[in-house]
Length: 178
Picture (cartoon, rainbow, N blue to C red):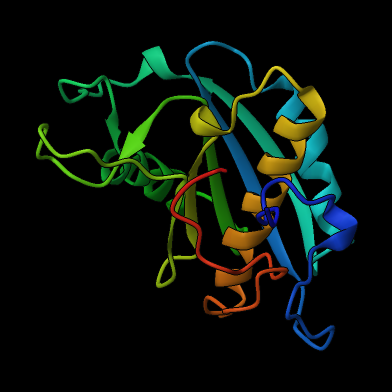
């Protein structure tokens, strides 16, 4: 059974990237419900090894300070989180705002459809909203690898990389973690 991009060691995943791309500054915003994103900061600091990015600032905000609604499944709408990221970006000098959360997110308002998202990147504004919710694992190393690879995947889109068909490519589309 072939391993997917989320379970392969990071050293075995290809990134179709050219080093000629100009570096981008990234502001990471942790929007947390359970405070379980502490290990995510350590993971995300590794991104600079894979992409021409410079992490300028990291904000940590409790989800409770925002008046957000959930659907019947307890999922947050990604567009609502995107609105928070837009507000942060308006007052930022960084090229990219990357909002990371530990809550389940969806792109649909229809509560009866089975739908979830790992992340969504809004290319026009250089904003990414990503959830660690579905990457959870008892294996800390596996969780960290999943978060790092998905963050690299989404930032790859910021660098205008589209999905690829190579199973070893971190930019390959994946509908599930396993």
